[in-house]
Image 1 (cartoon, helix red, strand yellow):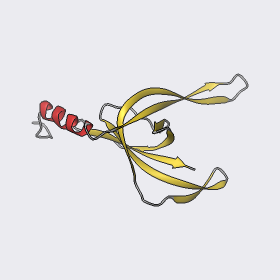
Image 2: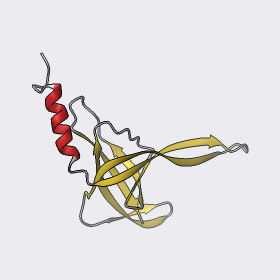
Image 3: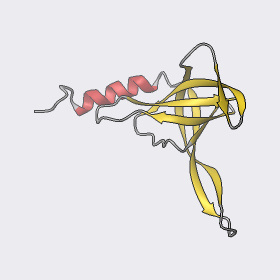
Length: 123
C-alpha cells in the first residue's frame, strides 16, 4: 500500500495546476571549479537550465549582517520551481536580471508538487 493515497495521474494534474502559478522565468547557473595552473582554482557559473519560477520575499525587511569583512544588507527569498528542477546549494539563480545565491535547498519526497529553494540577495 502506498504511503500517499494519490494516483500518478492525480499528481500529474496537481503539478500542472501548480505550474500555472509559476509566472516568471529563472535561469539556474551551475557552479564549477577548475584548476588555474598556478596551484589555485577559478570558480565559474554556467547557465544549465531555464525554468518557470516564482520568487517571493521570505521576510519583509532586509537584515544587516557582517559579510566579507563589511556590513551588508541581506535579503532572503523563496524560489518555487517545477518539481523536476535540479538546484544545488552551490548554484546561483538569475531572476528578472538579478543574481541570487542558493542558501538552502529543501529536501524532496516523491510526491512533491514543486521544488522550493531559499535564496539570498546581497547588496
